[in-house]
Length: 327
Image (tube, rainbow, N blue to C red; front, top):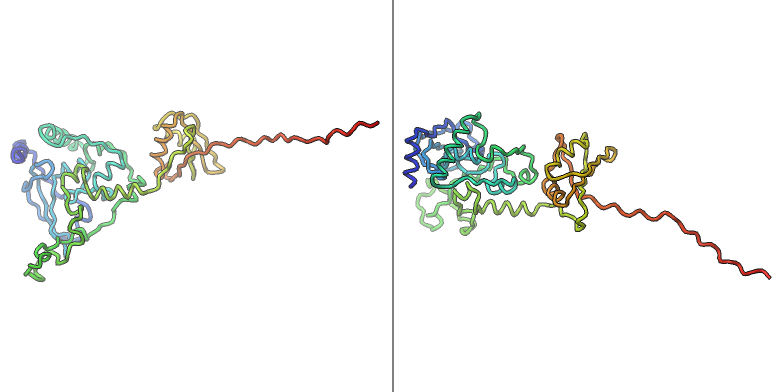
């Protein structure tokens, strides 16, 4: 089945012939003089089974040779590295990025529907500048300022990921190659670690990824804005207002539901946004908490507090008791 899919792709004369791989900085390695070996139409994509031009290189000293695992079309459709399949912008697994950004990618995964979908996306990508992601990711307006993704992001290169694998013969006590062995002579920290048993398709489609599960648990531990028990409260408090007016707040919050009132207090650098329904207020609070940026200013979001009843200022005067009658 895989051979037939690859063969049909070659019959259409639509081979993947990229001049340079789509890879992250970690996989590329620290060596600025590295040599990249290009093998034209030599490998089969491990996701779509299409033939593509693969690349192989040595990231640096003490590292293992790395190569591209998926074709450039699949990489652009998910905006991931061709080797490690991590997101190119945040360095995170696809499952983490999609859940936080609430991306629902329903692209077909096999059969004729997948072939038709890939052909359609390939034609759409030909009309771009070559740097725009395809599929649903090309339609996401992500400015890279998502607070949760920013806290979880792995933007700095982690070259230890390029180290050679542990020598299985050394673990058994049978390796006789000594210093000439290209693999690491050390014992695995946890042989039953689920992170060592990853499926490349699961990582690509964002399903059952143990690395993603670990990061999502970390994301769930971050502070959250808990709605108040009083369901009549539909007002959000916006703090740290600088050079932000009522129109700016209304333009930013109208997407979550009907707004009944917007108030800005410039002298106190705060404001209030009142929604018509509680569900709209909860939706706005969940989407903007620790993630609200207007006019390049990061604003704080909290639930508004109900105004207390003013005390009755009318004072009562106890008059002196009536004096006894005079005889």
